[in-house]
Length: 304
Image 1 (cartoon, rainbow, N blue to C red):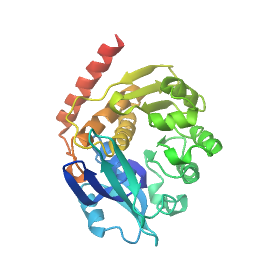
Image 2 (image 1 turned 135 degrees about the vertical axis):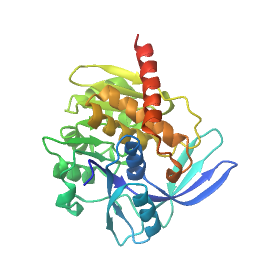
Image 3 (image 1 turned 60 degrees about the vertical axis):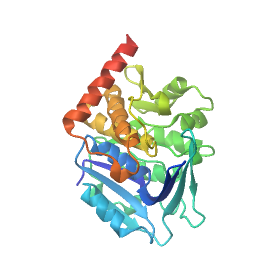
């Protein structure tokens, strides 16, 4: 059994880079990139997910060879197929294929999780429809485990009551800036983080894209800004998910949300340097710690 399980989507992506070319049928999805981000720091990482009848078995075998424990449910609907479209300057959008399965169809349900996968030290619930996330949280949360939540931007407006219920359960809430804006009602990340923490999470980290992340710890009232690492970005696909995986791993290893944000930022830095999840390096521990220490020094300097 893994120490950490990520729950979310596995997708099949066709990525079109401006004036570079297209990468066809690439494995992707928030669960996969979150798990890869956690693997920078932990060796025992698993994925709990649902895939469609057409998801390639060879992708699953390759992921297993990369060290991930996979607990996969097969559905009769098609898997999620996306176009990832990168414009000049780096702007991007993801668009579902017309024949794609839906988020609802391809989200794992609580009843699909066996007893053997309910005893882990930590879980990260990646973006899925809010009602399904809430069911998973209620099924998995225990007094002695850690659960982090990343909401789905399409399932916030109109789901306010369910979101508040989830915030009363989770230990860490990890929205993007846009998700925080929708949920809070204004683009004020620090105020939003404090508001979310008021419902119960110990830590709230708002992902700010190229501006890094803003982290608030409820018990101490501390707020810090963590910048991104200055690396040569090739593809930002999955960077926010990798941050989440690294953040949860950091919480497991240190228990400190501020340190966890550094771990998440380092994980994201390795993802953006690569094109495609299979190209993400598995750095030696010393190399990852070198980036961690460099980032820690930058945060301390910024706080002085």
